[in-house]
Amino acid sequence: MPTYKILIVDDNPGMREVCSSVLTAAGHSVSVAEDGFAALIRLAEEVPDLIVCVAIALLADRG
Image (cartoon, rainbow, N blue to C red; front, side, top):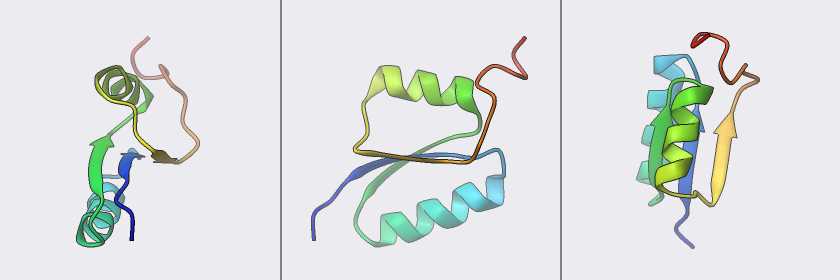
């Protein structure tokens, strides 16, 4: 099974943890972001193979 770099973007810490745990256990490299702004920072650092996110406003809380 191939290993993928996956970015999880979700404002719910529990959901991020569950998704991260399951995907890490499956052998994937997982990073997480709590909002769209944090996701943009992660994307500047490394481009993942897959992004898993909920519908979010990128800068809604950052003004």
